[in-house]
Each structure stands twice: as structure tokens, then as C-alpha cells.
Image (cartoon, rainbow, N blue to C red; front, top):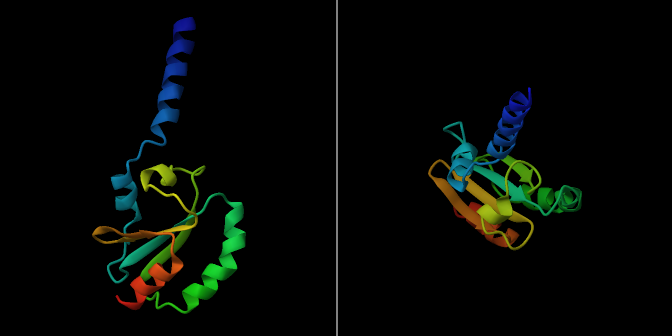
Length: 122
């Protein structure tokens, strides 16, 4: 009986550790637009879930002035979800905008103006 509990415990530890083992390359691959006529997905990495409500109004109004017809999705993410974006993408400021296209990582910036300039020139 003790051996069964021991193996169950090891299996449980393996599952928990294995749940968050995606690499940066796998995250980028999973985040690529899945529809050919959209060119980009944007992930907005915030410090925590509370920062979303603080930023949402500002970001929405800024995004309205940008041509985002080629963007499939825009999502918020933070580290206590599935991935450690801060470490994987070397994030030092929040929010950070990560733009991923069909070919992979296109842009990672905390500067909203840089993001706007990028989409104005595509």
C-alpha cells in the first residue's frame, strides 16, 4: 500500500511539473495566427490581473486609432497564469506588447507608440 501511495505521489508531482514546461518557442508556435488572412496576434503581458482594468480603456482607445484589420486576436496575459512570460520574453516593464505572426515573434515592446508605428507601417 505504501508503494502505491509513493508511486501516485511521484506521478502527481510529474504531472504538476509537466503542466508548465512549454518553452518560449512552443508558446510562440501556439500563439501564431491560425487563420491565413490574419497576420498577427497580440499578447499584452501585464503585471497582474488587476492591471487589466487600469489599462483597458487607454489601450482600447489607442487601438481604435490603429489599423488592426490584420490582427486575429488581442489577449491579456500575466505570469500566474500558464506561463512565465516575464522570464521567457525578458520583460522588464509592464505592459509589454508581444506581436506574433505566421513566421514567429515579430515585436516585443513596452512602448505603445512603437506598437502603433509598427501597425501604421505594415
